[in-house]
Length: 127
Ligand SMILES: [Zn+2]
Image (cartoon, rainbow, N blue to C red; front, side, top):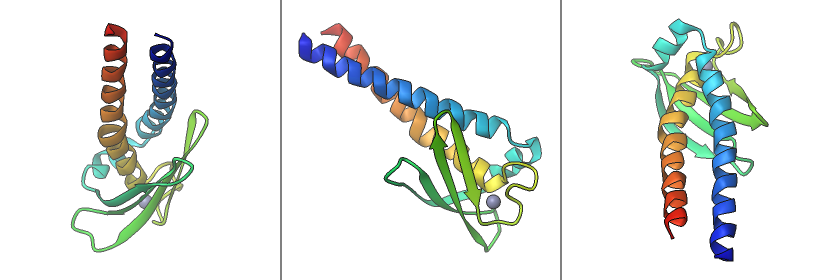
């Protein structure tokens, strides 16, 4: 039982961390200008990896475009700082490339991880 509690504590910590990271990324995406969020749907994330500090690095390409851009997202507490090598990033907030990365991360990393951790928690609670 002691072990189960220790594992449950770890799962709860992981869920709390994911809640903060996910909330920060969601705020970044939702804070994006509406036209850019729409155009972000046409951006392909062609490569992505997670760094040692948990930051995400990706290479993206716009629909029909031949140029690729390097995008990063780095968490600092409950905030996310993004960078992009395109000229548009930061002119009026997030560019479509960083918004595409944010959306992709929320859908393909955060959501599955949340479901997985929640399933582990339910299993532990049923023991
Ligand atoms: Zn960009």
